[in-house]
Each structure stands twice: as structure tokens, then as C-alpha cells.
Image (cartoon, rainbow, N blue to C red; front, side, top):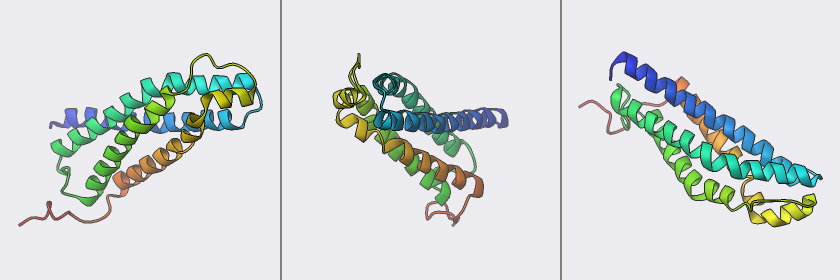
Length: 165
């Protein structure tokens, strides 16, 4: 991978990761507002925003980060499985991608459209999805922050597959 291409892919990788972390912050604010507000319109707006934003934005950011991460692993000296920090980041990315696709997006899409009523009526209409959506943004943000720290400090040694013979 040429220097120019590597930098472009790295910039896109960082952009997707930062965007995903921003989406996690937004999602956390919305689900906390949905669970705690006493105003029906606020609760309805919060859950409607989750239903509109998560299925469109998060999979794009997740896919972008995973694909660019794999490209960087394949196209740079670090490889995908040669260094423990890269390998752990790959595992984190795969697990988070799976969780987004099998839990977060379906959970957001399970929120009904046209929410109205008191705060409690809206929460009842949203049902279990309101509770299920509390967990993902905090776990995802923490995992992405961990991956970011790994990228900066590059701890640990080479893996068994990366040792020179």
C-alpha cells in the first residue's frame, strides 16, 4: 500500500471510529432521556430519533471501520495477526460489528413508529427495546476507547504467527 493510500485509509478508519463513538454518545443521551424523562413528547422524540438514526448511521460507521482496519492490517507492516494489539483490535471490531447487526439495529427497528402519549405510555409502547438499548452505547464506547488506546500504545509482543523464524 502506498503512503498516500495508507494515509487515506487510516484517515477514513479514524473518521469511522470517531463517528461511531459519537453515535454511541448520542445513543446514550437519547436512551437515558427516553428512560428518565417525565415528558411524553421528549420520550417519544428520543425513541423516534433512535429508530431513525441507528439503522442508517451505525452500520455504515461499523462497516467502514472494520473494512478499513482489515485493509490497514493487510497493507501495512503490522499485519492482521502478527501483533497482539492488532489481533485484539480485530477481535473487538468483529464482536462489536456482530453485536450491532444482531442486537442494536434490530432493537432500534423494533421501536414502533408514531409514538404519542404520556411518558409512561410511550415507554410501554416501546417495551423491552427501551431497556435493551441502555447497554450497547456504553459497552461499545468503552470497547472502542480500549481499541484506540491499543492503537496509540501498541502494547504486547508479536503473536505466534508473527514471530520471525
